[in-house]
Amino acid sequence: MAVPPQGHPLWRRFWNFLASRRVAVILLLLVLLLALAGLAVPQRPVEPDAAGLKVWQEGMRERYGPAWGVYEALGLTEIFHTSLFWALAAALFLNTLACTVDRLGRLLREMKRPPALRLPETAYALLGGGDAPPHPCSLGEARRYLRRWGYRLWEEPGRPYYFYGETPRLAPLGTLLSHLGLLLLVPALLLQPLAWRERLILDAEASPSALSHRPVCAVSALTLQAEEAGGFLRSISGELFVREGETAVRGWTGPEGPLSACGVNFYLRSYGLALQVEAADRSGRPLDVVPAEEGRTVFSPPPGKALPGHSETSAQPFVPAVFRFPAGSTERSFGIPSLALHVTVAPSATALAGFREGLLHVYIEQAGLNRPLFDGRIAANTTLELPTGRLSFRPSSFLEVEAVYDPTFPFLLSAGCFLVVGSSLALLFPRRCFWARLDEDGALRVRFSREEDTSGGAT
Image (cartoon, rainbow, N blue to C red):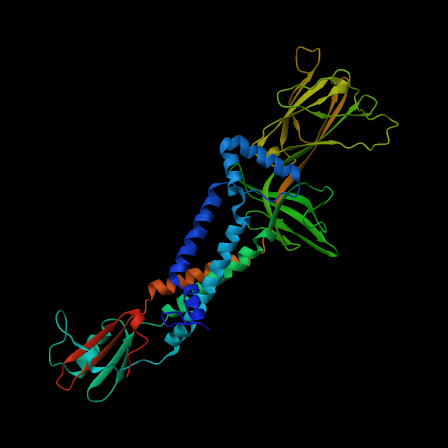
């Protein structure tokens, strides 16, 4: 093997470069800059279908305008999936591992080695000035003076007397824990692409919905529960029933925490009223209920199009219309084209939260009439008898649940704990030492040490 001019083998030079603190700082800064860019620019979500991704991209183009095209061209919309980010993360892992291995022996020796009681004679300096003990000082005066600094004190009897003092050996342990925390960030980065989130809208007591990322896991909403205090709803929780094969879990999700089942955490993101609406004519034949478009009143089917009504001979089962009132909404409108009716429903605050005892303000218009066909408050569970038919309301509740699978969480939590504890030990308990010698003439000589000087010089 060729030996470089510096006299170190090539592999040793490479190892010193790999374990360099300067390289670690540079890599940390580069990763941090990329992470900050990823936080400043919205990142491409992991959508289960192309339609959801297309909607997201269109929304970003409307928000950022021409700048969004520049972001996409530079790859800033998916920084955490680029080869550059992964290469820097891999380099940082190798550098952290090399730094840990390179310093592990020294750190362990600093934690375990016995105190060094003597230094070469020339290392000691005569203590003077300030609150120094009088010269010559006695053995008791020297002990009391040295203990004032808060060090643990060891003493070697004899003529002359030698003393050694040091702070607790927690700084090396803090360094080891900090390195371990950095190493745990690497598996978190490697597992990050496996994480996913999925939102489900579940009507209470309805059929279960399967997760698209985990089809064997079926989730259904059972009920919504809340406590009322001072006219306000507090501590709202939703009860879920989760089944995976033969395993079933029933529990609550809400402010107290998520429900864990199927290896997934279920968080309650929103809730509200799910109002089931059924319309029928005077003979009881079910009629279509059509949601009203924004700012448009539905009275009759569009010209030239037949109404897809439910005839008595229809093979299609009748499915009631369900209108959900998400957070922030106060009313919903729908039409019954067969009866030329336009209906607006505005639930009370209690009904909006999904509770059946709430009231509904119902406003019904009919084509050709100059006044409302009906305008008033009714109970949420009511059937209105109209001149041309009847309209039934059946209240229920819905839960918007977010299913989160994140295999990185245990590693991130452990890494954070190790980094916090290790940094605290290294900062709050720095390694400081001193050596002292009390000569036969009573002169007290002391040598203070920096942290990096404490590992050698003892005789």
